[in-house]
Figure (cartoon, rainbow, N blue to C red):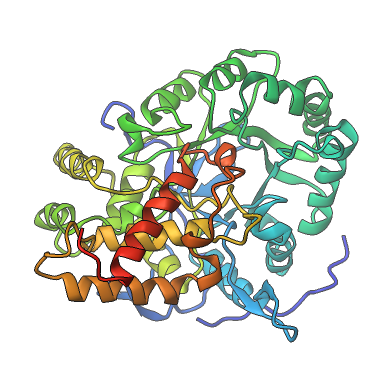
Length: 464
């Protein structure tokens, strides 16, 4: 396929299941000198290593996959000349260049990510690198109830557009997207009754799909059904795994302990999503962070979560949606190389989990499946601000709290800075259109009312 946008690459800058697995450390793919940097928490990191990335081997194909995978759901945006949002392609290129130069070689996208822009931006950035230096994962995202999308013809058109936008003639890892949402009837409508799964199996046979798998949220019956279908033989699966969801999954999810154990029985490699639970595990309450710091004073909460997600031997790669360079650099360090968790560290995270389960968090992972809101509410941003206030210990219980003035200002000023006024919770009319789309099964309208009521109490300086 002809590359129309080719540019020279910028040189800027669980003890039973856990084990070494098939791990290798490979030399850097590119020889650029890394930049000095600081962590997302402000501590000095020094140089980010180019030759220490941990790799796992896919036994189906022999692919050596970097343990840190790039989730392409949140590429940087900028305003165009008309004042409208667009992908900041220069920033995407820089992030991709840096990632590949430091051992990241798995890039996960979808036709529906970032308003449909992600595949094209990802393909443009990756096309500037040799094809054998990266693996592309994308999805059959035919979740829309529109019959044109759900039909065999519509699904095939989506698949072929993915190839076109990614500028490739084969896809390394192709997923049936979020198979459990809607239950068994929806799954069969999307993939079985319309012949779409048969088509994709044929594409795998022809070599245009190298690995065929699925991502899972929702009804566990669909997960179990697919694993039981010996005639299909899926090559990999994406599941939500982190130290909270291991035994305490909420909403439309199943405990990761069960999911990973079942995949291991079938010798199916696991791709991990939500290792930070939508960022929640990178900004834990101070009480939890202090417990971590007693064991590893220099390590961030995010590093603990990444080490947890990467330790099980059946994990092929752990996805992170990294918009900022400092997050990319810090996450590379977590797996360059991976130091698997030991028994003491697992016990430490059990204590942290107990604290988090008793916190006042809204269980939003900022996946954006609830978006767009027809009334313009930025649902993930509203929840994100509220959760950050909680993690900072600034959620007021009473107007008589000792830190009332400071915490009130932090909430209101931070709210206006992070969420435009017309997109805040007070504009929610409670229509509920968003609720069925939430993998965590959050009662979004109820949580919006709670946040709006709290905001109004602070604005009016009312007693509560």
